[in-house]
Length: 430
Ligand SMILES: Nc1nc2c(c(=O)[nH]1)N[C@H]1C(S)=C(S)[C@@H](COP(=O)(O)O)O[C@H]1N2
Ligand SMILES: [Mo]
Image (cartoon, rainbow, N blue to C red; front, side):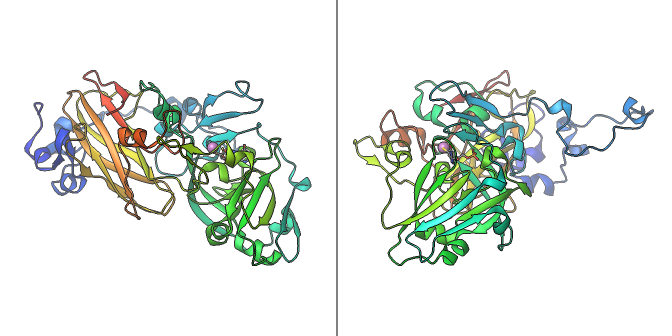
């Protein structure tokens, strides 16, 4: 270990590469600025004659109707991964800059977007939701009617089935940030009406097994959803983090199917058609199926797997020299809550359990953290999550051997970041 790695830090080591126990660090009275940690303090010394900053010498700006981030945060934006013009008109997507965010809730302006035919800007006064097919009575709901129904609020992630496809498909790891590599996932507090209430009002015919949902955008994205899922925790979401859905997220209403692949969370939803069998729409017969290495094709692979990624540090960042850091990242699973996240700072030779930041909610993002003393030597950081069902993240090799070489959906392998002696952080396959 490097000079200055004192006894207190050594006694807090929980795994190779300098991973530390937060509890043992705190127990030893070692706060970042504490006297015992003088070598590791990140705080500046207090000046004898504090200056009054210029902005404190006159009145500030007036109030404004809708707030925006500080001008110094202008780089914190969604990253355009697939521009609008590239393929079919309107097929475009942008990633959440996970590496710039803390906590677990994605701000509304940074929620990732996947549009198959561009963003639909819908006048809510002219929008209707129809429930029809195998029901006792077909119903039409406008937004004013829906506002009078009981609503629930839940925190859930949405992840595109194609998230992390660069790592799935590229032989050489792409050097890009978490926004490009893993940004097709976001997490929000959604408020809306349980589908069970709306379906019960229409009166579900006992023959109905599926709900075929379609949206009012140009490609009329449509997916068949098992009736049981819709009745269990399906939601017609109207609000996102306390305010109305953003147009990007399906304003004025979208489906929320917790834990299911992003594609099934139909935006701008206008039709719920109850049927005996799935409709085999274009969005579930060609698109959003996965070919396995033995040639068989998986269809209706609804749930997203257990996954984690270290966001701090992550590729494109630079570490500012050896010393104490807080490793931090995100974990989520479509099957339930996150049970554990383990971190390695020595390329997978040894692992330590990270602290999970409460609340740890099912089918929602969970933040994990672990203190780390980097000795300045090159190393590889990794994280691996286990969910409440016992499912664990595969290695990239294990994942690749399961799927056909051209298959990029549902990639949830362990992410490795290589730390260089110069403090650089790179995407590596390990
Ligand atoms: N009507 C409609 N719903 C849609 C889409 C779409 O293009 N049209 N994109 C789907 C896909 S592929 C994903 S991953 C999610 C993305 O949701 P978001 O844009 O709110 O992040 O919405 C799904 N719902
Ligand atoms: Mo998607």
